Image (cartoon, rainbow, N blue to C red; front, side, top):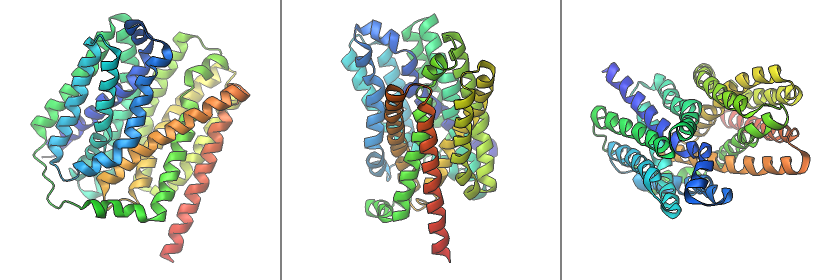
Length: 386
């Protein structure tokens, strides 16, 4: 039984890996997409922005609608849609069709993610649920570490079709694994829409949602311009930047499990210290950025800390949404995308107005604001208990 559960969690993580590869892998192949469809880079950029926008807008509502359905059916349908979408990307000759098939998987993205996390937690005893969730989260970090660069590599060395078919194959393997190993999981005690939406009445939940948005803004205000910073400030060439992207992703995998253990030992302390550690890393990047070797060392540490933001934010939000875990996870997916959008936009403003090197202060500002919000949340909680 334990072996079956481990296999199931592996396939759920593989499904998440396929989703991240589909969502983020497109960034590395936009030049080839531009050439294939004879469009401008800004038009090709819609493939990225439309996905994030749909995820942010649809997540909670679609998860509510799916909350009474068999979890196995939803997981299978979602991962199959991702496989089909990648096949369409590979063979369509019309940009409009490709754009439409960015919208369709984006709709099911938060539903799959939310239910995969809840399913993983339900497969193990309560005291081991955080470790099961960490393993599924590993699908995200492995996606960043290998899925995104491998998609770019396949497009460059073989063809754009091969890059997208790689995403389709990953999703189909996850589909078969879930189909074979996961038992039927009908919802026995369906929670009403009203009861799930009822958690939104809590001021503490909204404080937590704002905190998650700010944490992701802190992370992605700088990470979104990773290549720009290394090129302009550290003066790395394209090959070195590609290697640093890979190194960043690999250390994300280690950081994922490291922060998972920290959360398991002391959740409150880990959540509070995370933005402070991130601000400290940013200070190091700011002062050591112009120096090649010190910056390489910073990138390894940065990647490990960056991945902590994913599981720290999810744990933070789920402490306020225990009664409706699937809906709570969908809120996490949606509002983390809001944070990515805000962080990327304000980071871009910092670069245009103050220069690339000063971008780091944008990340520090958001990190310290997140720390302040977490402190307010902890103090509010202690007053409730006293």
